[in-house]
Amino acid sequence: MTQKPENFTPGIHNADYENEYLQIRLNASSLVNITGRKTEPLNGKWGFAADLYDTCRRQGWFRQERINSEGREVPLDFNWDELEKIDVPSSWNLQKPELYYFENFGVYTRTFPYTPAQAGERLLLRFEGAAYRTTVFLNGKFIGTHDGASTPFNIDITDVVKEDNRLVVSVDARRSPYRVPMENTDWFNYGGLYRDVCLVRLPSIYIKDWFVRLDPQFAAKDSYVIQVDICIESVDVFHANGSKVTGTAWMEIPELGINNEIQIYNGKGEAKIPASLQLWSPENPKLYDVKFSLNAIGRTDTVSDRIGFRTIAVKGQEIFLNGKKIFLKGVSVHEDHFALGKTTTEEIIRQTIRDLKEMNGNYLRLAHYPHDARFARIADEEGVLLWEEIPVYWAIAFDNPETYTDAENQLTELIYRDRNRASVIIWSIGNENADTDSRLSFMSKLAQRVRELDNSRLVSAACLIKHDKLVIEDRLVDFLDVIGFNEYYGWYDPDFDKLPKILANSNPEKPVIISEFGGDAQLGNRGAKDELWTEDNQKYIYERQVETFKKCSYIAGTTPWILYDFRCPRRFNRYQEGFNRKGLIDADRKTRKPAFYVMQEYYRG
Ligand code: GCU
Image (cartoon, rainbow, N blue to C red):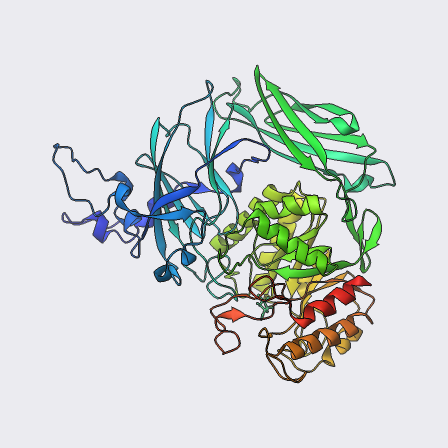
């Protein structure tokens, strides 16, 4: 370590100032399942400043005091109470015209009061999603940094929280070759605290997480085994031998007459419980009230959830839901709204599902990153099947260990968040990556990670085919249950005849989902069927694609790209004007293009 000169001034000379903020990493290991718990929202108007040079972290604003140790006032470059206000949650790009293309550091701040409700209470600060690197400070203390723009994270702030609190959050929305996704994406990079922020009170020993599903080994007809894993956290109470909690938990499903004891050792418990139950399906989205309670060394906790039970499996080239072959009648969708950006609402989610059902669909590809947690919850209620995905998109830095850690953590946070949702049937580990050795190593490890975390769902990825050989081929396929196949014949490659050739040349051992196809059409632009950018051309592309699908027995589902036009700063021509126009519905999320009805007819069958 070189000796620093006497006049070294950290706030201006310290090039590696960020290291301090990488000492506490917020990741899946600390993620708490807060389903069913009472939350205290911190949503609303927060102070905000665009912090172009990351000065908040560089100069350690969180440490600075207006009055110095000699009792004199010193000039600070900020006053937390005087910053302009911005909505949380919101995509900051749509809050002010000058923030539209802002992809840098933004600093947020607010105060909040806190009074413990019970002795030994733990207090969790929870973020549902923030894009991309989030550094959190509370009452003048750095308390953690999270990477990833679309998965939740939380911090136990019990030891830092006071009666009156100052919360400061720096959000870094920059794109980078080493992040997940990297800096080049075919969608708009919204920034900020764009999903809910809240507080959650927990007892000193609490139920941290649970995973409830049908054991795939016992999916015999009419008699099923419910497999349960439960995880208990004890922050301040350890037995003499330093082990974690030992005690008893109960799982109740009143409608099934289940009230089972689960022994807890070292903070974990598991059980397999036979049950005769109604299976969850799109036609009958049956959900059961599930309640967990804990009694450990005299401390109790209860949580509740609503869970559907179903099986999903592949056999040969077919997908089976509850033992019956299923065709996934889907469409892809981005989390992009013309007025709210990547921020969404329950109504927007319900409208998306209504639009899918109007198309006679039963399945959605939530591209290319984890969508809002409410989506899978509402899909559970509405009987919609989901493909959920992490943004290992295009040319990720596959040979960078930190990039892998980031990708695996986002995958783990997604699976922890949604693995009790019956609607989720497929975890996708990426999209359109070149078939290199480093990518194969990176993504086969991700596929392995899925299987470690969840024995009840399918693993897939949206793959590119070998265009020159006209065959569905990708070394990653060996690690997948379902092959996602993106193709744009009729658009990027105008030669439709290649698609039937590829399908005929290929004999995949696994089911294939056409995970993307389509073409751009500007709403209202009419012309000949071979005239690009017209609704007529888009409709013709869909007619030719669907006609070919009907002749291929091993296509187990399709998710055309895409349900709605969406913002994309890579798209400049007069038809696109900063949007990707492949939507079957315009960006207004109302006006259908003719190709919508081609899919509606295809899925009616
Ligand atoms: C790719 C990619 C999408 C993109 C689409 C397009 O397949 O997966 O993210 O938007 O093609 O080019 O429109």
